[in-house]
Structure formats: C-alpha cells, structure tokens
Length: 428
Image (tube, rainbow, N blue to C red):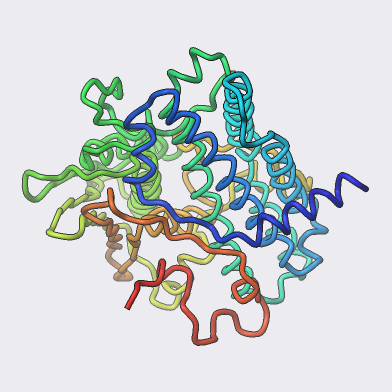
C-alpha cells in the first residue's frame, strides 16, 4: 500500500508539470553532437520529460469512467504505464560524480528500452478492452471515448518517438558502455530501402533529413501487395508518380511508412474485393501522387475500389469502423478477454481492426499535418496526406492531462477554449 501511495503522489506531482512539445530540430540537436555530454543531457531529458508524459498518460486513463478501468485489458495497460513511471523515477537524478553519471545514464537508457518492449501490445490491448466494454453495453459516451482514444494514442506516439530517438541516436554510446541490453527494433528500417549508415549525418537517430517519400511509398506498396496476394492471390499494381525533382523532406520515416502502408493496404483490398468475381479484366491500378509545394508535401492515393457511401464517410475515422471482417486473432482475444498480442506492421492482418485509419491520421497530425478521405461511391476513394514541407521546425501536437481537457462527459470540447489538436498557442 505504501508503494502504491508513493506512486500516486509521484504521478500527481509530475502530472502538474506541463508537457514540453519538441521540434524535430531540437530533438535532432542531441544526436548531432553525439558525444558523452550530449548523451548524458539526453538521458536527463528522457528522465524528466518521460516522467511528465507518463504521468499525464496515467492521469488521462484515470479520468475515464470507473467501469473502463475494471476491464482487465485496459487496467493492464494502465498498470504498465504506472510501472514504467515508477521504474523511471526510481533512478536517482542529478549525479554528482562521473561514476554516478554513468550509472544514471545506464539505468535511464535501460528503462527506455524496457518501456518500448513493455508497451508493444498496448494498441491491441486497448482495442480488445474497448470492444469488450462495447459488447457489454458499458460505453455510453461514444464521442468521449473517441476523444480519449485520439488523445491516448497521440500521447503514445509522442513518448515512443522520444524513447526510440534516444536509443537510436546514441546507440554507439549505449553499445560501448554496455548500458542497455537488446534495444527493441524500430520500423525505420522498413520505412525505406536506403542504408542508414549515416556517413553524412543525414540520419539523426530516427530522423532522416532527406526522407525520400517515393522510396517509402514504393516499399509500402510492395508490402501491401504481398499481404493482398496472401489473402486473395491477386493484387493491383501500384503506380507512383512524383511532380518536381525535390521530393525529399526532413521527417520520421517510420511514421510516414505507417501512414502510407495503411492507406495502400486499404486501397489494394478494396480494388481486389470489388473485382473478385471478375476474371476477364485486369485490376485497375492504385495511383500514388507525390507533390511538394512551397509549404506542404502532399501524397494522394487514389483507387477504383468502389468507394464509400456518403452516409458512412463520417465514420471512417471512428475506432472500430471497418468494412472488413475482424481477424480471427482479434475475435479470439475478445472472447478470451486477453490481448497480449504484439503487432508487426509488415505482417499485420490486411484489415478488420478498425484502428488503422484513425491512428494513421494521428501520425499525420503529430507534426502538424493531416489525413483526409474523399470518396465517390460506385467508383473509388482518394486519400490525401498533408505533411509540413519543412517538418524540421515542426512542433509535436500533443494533448495535456489538464482538468479541462479531461472532462470526457458533458459535451467534450464544446467550451470556447483552444483544442489540443490546434497545436500550441501563438503569441499575439
């Protein structure tokens, strides 16, 4: 009981501090120098900012209706975050000797690695838990639950990026000091085909200063088509077109890959299912257009998969909305009440969870972009991904567990206050 009380007090204390949204340039500055001093500074930042963000996530979950936290999967996710918070803040900060500094860095880095591994099943666990609550009639506030999931998963994206960036940017220091065991793999390798050996400092941790969007789209198309072939023994071609010569941006390739891969999975499935009974016609291709303007980079993914009825278009970003049947593993987890399933992006089921589009939109919005869907029923769908052309100076868009923002009941976000998705307020 004493330990639980101390954890509660710690979460309350750190939860009072504001989250400090970062720019890619500020995060990359640590990895640019990549020496012992900046490594120690990065560890200090992970300790303080990580504890604050974990505390906000826990407060976010504790603001849910009590019945939600009685569901085993959601409670398990809550307990994971409490465990991660306790593990991180148990490291004694402000070392006074070189030996203490080395020990501090080793423990913080080990904690960061452990957190990434521990929270891998979070998305599936939340999905199963929410589905069970829905089936049992406990979700009364649909808009509030949708808002919670958007906020929760955006916060998760933010903290996982910081942890992955730290481990990736300082992997040489970590390896030489032996301060962290096996580091969990990130999806950066899957994001493109170029070598990240980084002789020209193009890569800084998980950030690529010359992210080749067409290269990522080509890799995502290859994997999406493979999934489609595995299920239907057929897949449409994916044609990628770029306008202009400058198609590179500073970005987080794993995030961009996640977005494009999800959209291409949906398009390939829609086209293949629409023409499933037709053997005399070639499948119409999925077209990807990449355009970089003065301020934005836009990716348009167009298919002829039959489109979405207008009545359903408002629901496509709702969690659990899916036009496909649910995967067997998901249904089994819902039935059994346990969802310790780690999802691999490249080997994920083709469709059916209902979380793909809303989470992809969060990835786009994380650095100030967006994802929109336009559809013509009877023909096909156009998906537009808008990203900042100069994301190097873009700031994280994150929720904060303030008293106002945690009011999930009584018409959420109807008060005349700034919405968290609008980003930080600008000085007048």
